Length: 512
Image (cartoon, rainbow, N blue to C red):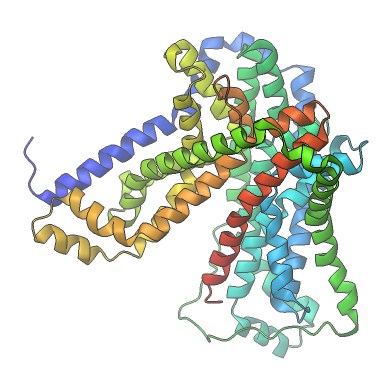
């Protein structure tokens, strides 16, 4: 076929690459559909409609129904204190509210189990989940609260509304999108998390799938549980879309560029300080003090293990390889989103994004099944592990790349092609150079996610692979908390840059 112009050739090549990545991203969903059809409806019914699945479903619904509302109340209150009140040290409390993201969820659980060995069941899961995942709600709510137009509040106040009525009738409705989006993130993490709930012996679909996989190696029961878990994810996505609604939240015109007046706490300052202080102590103080205690008890001997250097080296190697490969795979889609939006772009983008809502255990189980049945030489190889990382963190890379590519002027890219550069060469030499900082940030976000990933690594890592997360998990299973402490500390230290980056980007978006 003869192309009409170099521009068409370049976009066609990028679109083809995006299509190939999208087809790979559809593997987990295809796995669920294929296994369900192959198993047969009678067997599916017997495996799904049984007391064990009902028990897991009840646990999941209770966990979601209790955790998310409490997290919403805490996140909104904390965001109002740090963004709309004269709370002393508001910036410090804002950073401390985000910092718990630097502590992996299963390290939170490890810290609380060390402090209270008898922690078990639903309410323990709710407590630790809130401490680990509250920042996912706080970040969007606080960012949205900073952007609100204070003129609307002034009008409500001038009409005689009390401060509390202004908050509930004017401010809170405008936070609906942020609350729904943050709640969806928290809800998906609750469905996907394995290590946190395994430690406190609270059964969820993820823990049951991993247990079933380890005992029966990809048996039908594990596959059907994975299917139910995918359905739960889809229900959560649909519920969020329904609650989000179609209301308009924007205004015509930019409005007055002025910050909202901060509420005076007055004599209640010390009382209000108890909220950010208490959350900081529970979400950061408990993990850090627990780690310090175990490291002190272990002394220098705790750092003498040869596994520390090996685990750190392999973790960094996987993080760098996975970060680079995932970012490279996401580039075509990010470029299409910015340079060639349209129907094809929307379909391909949905294929890239949906996989981010699937738990890592489902992605890992899909790759296990595919490699065992179709490509056995790839079973438990580094290639399969890196593919799992790529699928799990592909949406994270696309989001970061899309923002950086949007800031690179398309005119420079066209000028390079007009001067004789082939389209792909122009994209690489001009656009990618201008987007280099955003590309590096996307690689860092993916790499830091890989650093603390546990479930897929446990299921897919080749024999002899030792990462910080898997070694930590192995030692905690042996109740050797002293030896596990250095691995937990290294994961925290490697993850902290992510929290700093998220906090910085959140502030930067409004020029602070």
